[in-house]
Length: 148
Image 1 (tube, rainbow, N blue to C red):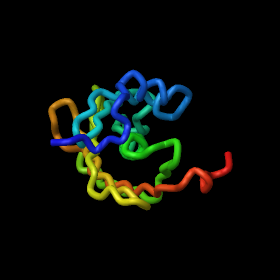
Image 2 (image 1 turned 180 degrees about the horizontal axis):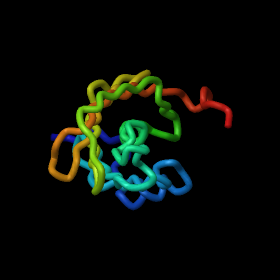
Image 3 (image 1 turned 90 degrees about the horizontal axis):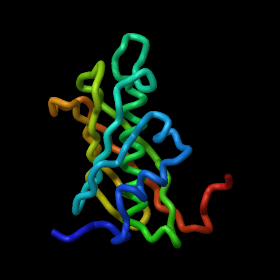
């Protein structure tokens, strides 16, 4: 199977370095695997990612899902010409976790010229499905980049 990635020369270390100073770094997201057509990352279930009942916060799961899908989209693109931004995300929370690490896996559903759609599944350490998310990413030409 061939790679879907535009960027052939990247590493987990480079992906992790891109997260410096972001919410992903703050909540402990770590990229762990790059496959031919998927990207995988983990996140701790700890004081940064739990809600008051001691369960994994649904928003933390969504943050992991959007981080995975957005980074995966950026790896499919020539980022000298294009950028990608989240357009819509949804999530179904199937079960929760109280501790340990969760793992998210992003795989493409659609890789078009103006949008990408990603399927992101999040599992606990026992490989039980916790969350299913779908992220739609808008592909913009560099001149259309949002003002910061």
